Every structure is written in structure tokens, then in C-alpha cells.
Image (cartoon, rainbow, N blue to C red; front, side, top):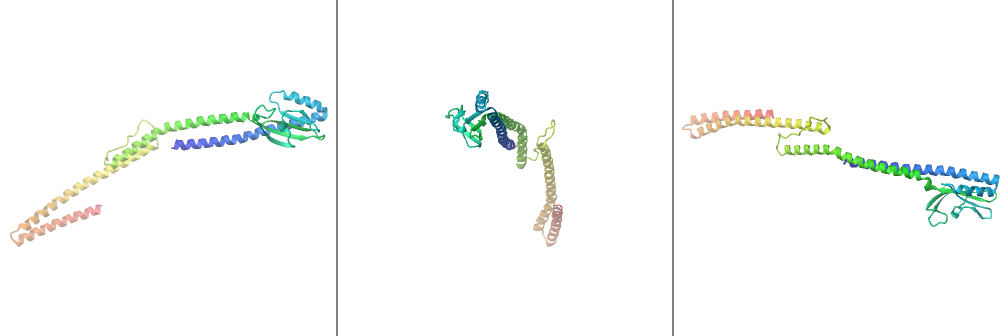
Length: 282
């Protein structure tokens, strides 16, 4: 049970850690992507202002061919598309999250786009974005690693706990069996203690139980001895009382009868003194 409890706590801890890591990694990935997109938008705006629209379109075409390139959408003030193949990126100014299904033309796969759109003074609109999921690939790798590490740790923890508790469980079973034997009347039952290993808590408990059983055994033997001696000490005067009463019953005259009764009364008084002594001892 303890192994399961600790494993549950471990699973909960790993779940919380994975959730926090996911949130932190997503935030970090989005923050890095925002910085990259913002830098690209500023660079293109500067290029359009300095070198003109044609140079910017050429630069976009060159950059789009690079591995891991950003997505671009550029239209002039008349609404004519100058660059880009994702119409959904034509968003109002500011930052936007756009879900692109597989059916959208120009989308290679289902994507979650982070897009920054801006309108230039001459009415030209520029949108730059990238797939946020692609930026989060490192996060996914870290989460997978955490998952497998957590799973291996839980399996190892449960297995180690089961192995470690077998000894404790066997000691508890042995202790319960000894207590059951004593309750059934076997006062000589004792727990076997290991002398070849460092004692643990259950070993010390077993030693204390053995000492308690030794003490109980001594008390019971003393009680039996005292009971036997009391019975022997009472039997003799009671036998005398019986004999005196038999004499009184068969006495031929009143004197013999009175003498026998007086002797019986003396023995009864002795018995009463013995009883009083027993009560005082009790």
C-alpha cells in the first residue's frame, strides 16, 4: 500500500511537472517565435522603404526557399497579391493565431500559425507567420523524455517497493501468527529473531513482543504455583474440619461432640485467615 501511495504521489508529481513544462515550453517557444517574426517584419518594412517593393518581393522569394522559412503574405494597396500563398494570413493588424487545416491551399499539413500583420503608410499590407507547432518540436521531445523517464521511475519504484516490503510483510505475518498462538494458549511460542542482520523496526518490535511473552509466561507460572500451594494449604485444614465434623456426628456423648465442633471451628478460623492472606496478596 505504501508503495502504491508513493507511486501515486510520484505520478502526480510527474504529471504536474509535465504540465508546467508544457506551459513553460509553449510560452518560451511562442516568445522566441514572436521575436523572430517581429524582427522579420521590421527588416522587410525597412527593405521596402529603402530598396522598393520589387526588391522586397525578391527577398521574400529567396527567403521562402530556405529550410524552416517563415510564411509571407504581401499585398499592395489595391489588394493585389505580391507574395504568398496562404490567404488566411490576410488578418487585421496585430498578432493572431490561425488554425490551418490540411485542405487549405498552400498548407503542407495541419498547422497552428502565429501571424503578425501590419499596414504600411502607403496602404500595402504585410503578414509574416510561422507554424507554432514546428517551433515547439523541442518542447514535444522534452515532454516525451519526461513521460518515459516518469514511467520508468514509477515501474522501478513499484518493483523496488514490492521487493523491499516482502521482508516486512513476512515479518508481520510471523508476528501475527505468534500472537495468535499465544491467544490460543501456547505461552511458549516465540518469534524467531535474526542474528545475522542489522535489526530493523520490526525486529525490535519482535524482540519487545518476546520479552512481553516471557514476562506473561513467568506471571502465569507463578500464578499456577501459588494456586497449587494455596489449594494444598487449604486442603489440609478442610480435611481436618471434615474429620472433626464426622467425630461430632458420631460422638457418644455431648462432651465429645462439643470438643469436635470446637476443633472444627478452630480449623475453619485458620482457613479464613488463609483466605484473608490471599485477599491481601491479591
